Length: 563
Image 1: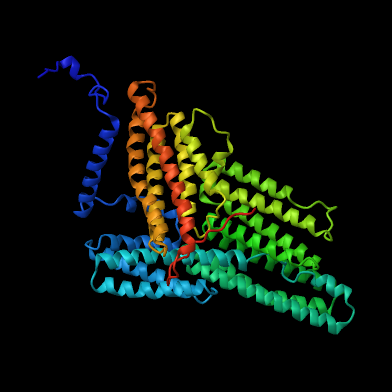
Image 2: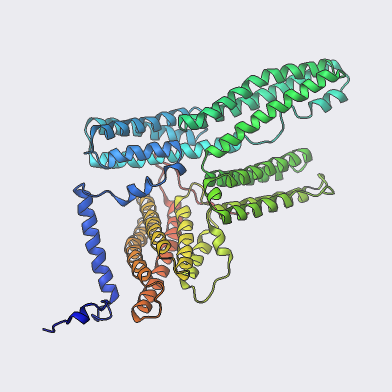
């Protein structure tokens, strides 16, 4: 046996010294850590990593999502003290109550989707409250998450569509009154305008109440106050409008009407702004994009109604400005100056898309081109919020990890991420991998480790979602293929975490034999992970056409972007 002298014992040990392959050490270490983590969680000595990550920042989550986390804390660890069970049951009931209210305002099939989930959650909650069962508790956790997603999606849809600024309240009333000399016709026009005003106010107040019900009391208080103010101002505006019609030449009457109209419009704008800011910015942007695209397609079928095409263009432009405002007021934008600058650039592009004064409303192609430019500017906002602007820079040959991320992004960017979590998480994985490459080149060890952890979590989420989709597929060949590509991801992502830890320890000391070996393995691993996620997306898209119809749960949609 060789005796190690004191001087030698001070020398830093490396895998190369022991003539040991890094891959073998990584696999052994990974297996040991997995066993320790699983045994510790089963014994209740340590908490799951997912719980910690989910509760790390509740400020970015909606009210129903927060309630789901509280319920999951009980369902994940049912042996906790009685107060946690009480809080968990209450939180689950809160989510169910919001779901019941939502069914009163949505249309089919969204209404039926939420109704089925509510019924299933009520049954599961009753079973878990009486006698907890691990399998039942796990199903309840999944159903509560599905219900929360459906609720948030429904609220965002209502905020976008019900609050569209297609026409100002009492629009053109003064012009119509001054142009029409017949008193009977003026009264008829007034009645029509009042009916439109009250109908619009009904949609606004309904949506505002739904938004308030889906948020905590302190966040909903101001929204309820502004909604009540708009409701009180409406009769005053109607009264002023009636006087305006009966006394069209009285200056004081005209000024009073204009004053009441300005107050009412300002109150509605405040309600709209509060509703817009109460929902998730990314969901708002995605829903608004889809709504604008639908409005564009509908206007294309109304080529003979030039005024309607003009109104549609104006409504789309106003909705696009709401998209910009929501994005710029988001928490991420407020914290990130670079993100704010990118949004400001998108805002300027939207302003530049305003049609020139010489643009004739009688030329439908001009308006269609203008709308298309607005949609492109709005689509850029989604990319900015998702961090996808990182792929604007040209790839360099010495950044193989960045190139792997860029390839994944190029493969999934054509898919809409709305109502498709697999696409959304795949895009996020590509962005995170690109950031990892930048952090490694900048020798930012802490960011390298935290980003690799986020990549592992995102890749596991992709695999979980795709595996769930595979179990609903009726084609056994497609199902088997999707499950096989899913099974590769946990192993590859686990190796990524170990390799980035090794690489992170050598930042600032590049060029050693061990560093070169670790870097080569890390590059290969990153490329394999990005390719595996791309394979999962492709296989999931193919499996989507073979999904059997099931009761409840949000449906995953595969929609290609054409703007």
